[in-house]
Image: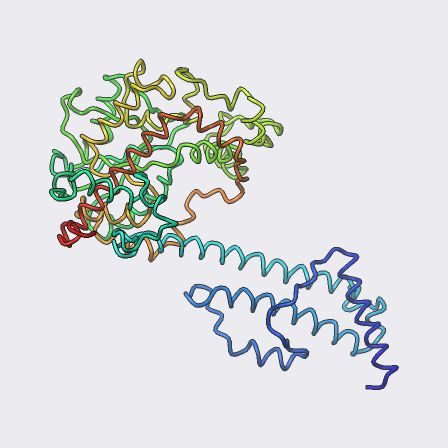
Amino acid sequence: MSLGADRSYKMKLRDVENAFKYRRIPYPKRCWLNELPTNSETMATYFGDQDWDWGSDWDWGLWLCQCQCLYQCLYQCLCQCLCLGGGSFCRGATFFGVQSVELIALLAISCTFFLFMHTNKLNSRLKEMEVKLQPSEFSALGLTSNHVSGHDAGKHDDINTLHGTYQYLKSTGQLTHLTAAQLNNTPRAQLDTIFFNRVTKTGSEKMMELLKILGKRNGFEARRDVEGFYEVVLMDPTYAKNFLHSDVLNSTGANTYTKHVAFIDFDLLNEPWPIYINLVRDPIERLVSWFYYARAPWYLAERRETFGEKAVLPSVEWVRKDFNECIEEHDPECVYEQMEMGNLGDHRRQSLFFCGHTTSVCMPFNSHEAMQRAKRNVEEHYAVVGTWEDTNTTLTVLEGYIPKYFAGAKEEYYALRSRLGNVNRNNFRPTLSEKARALLARNLTREIELYQFIRHRLYKQYIALRLDLDPKLREAN
């Protein structure tokens, strides 16, 4: 190529680049690979032998870089083909009735959309890998002092962690005699029924999907309540007894029943006890989740479609409200006053689902008495209360303490993780500011204490299972 031709080519290439620049089309960043293909044949050679299996477990970092390289290659090849092909094409000619610059814009937007979709896929895969890296064995977590570095020792010794719970049980002498049988309430059940009185915004939809899958595998029927415009969470004794007979106790075979409802004391109603299970979530994260979930367009549209005119659409101002501003500016919607009896609809009381239906005790927000009753009910009546924040631990405990229903739970969960991991998930939730988090924490002290108590119990159940399998761990240093 002559000097003049080379200069002409560079000018044409610059014209195309300017089209990207001034039309605000994203210019592809340079990949870490030193050399990139500069023609279609080389590009086909480079990318043609790649295995584009988006569901595989290969190196996702390399995959993302290759996607970035593909974007850059398409861009470079397009520029070269247009500028070397005819000259006039770069100066505004049309191609099938479309301006060349518009064609470039369309191709660039298509590439950007392609990258956006598969970057989302990468984020999902990374989250799944984080879940897989949660503790499933003592050695993986480092449940001996040999596995704990000085830098991490303080964090691991926190009683609200699995390692901290282990060290606490060991230091207090409880580890020597701890067994899973001591912590297993399943044999006390008088019905072959799991009663999942699910707490709102804890990932209960995901558990319901898992129960459906396990029902086919383990031979039980997974049932749920009939969806209504209002959730009946609190019931008087007459209503509760009628509900149990019409919905819960009317199945003869092995089954599960799921509903948003406060803890029911079956002794008070002279009814046989089922196997109680539930899920919890960090109280602050629950509030944030509900705030934005209630404003999600798809949630509002779904309710409108299901309930028609009864589901009144909120104002645009309400939908656009920001939770951080709501907390920091003391908006009435986001003021969590101590001992208040109202605002049942915003699901601020996780404790209510474990406390029960005595409103004078269980409704005062963040009360000590409600927390204590909830703790007692969890300890005495629930087989397992887990959390998706400790996925492997929760699934292991469910498999170990309720094997008839949850055998194969981990296998089924990870086989369908892409489906189960995104059930009812709101991916457009803004981040909570540290100031707002601190303000919430001061108003949720008992709710947070209950949550930590339940996680401590879950860890204790998990540790007991591992000790039964490997008694040597009782003497580990």
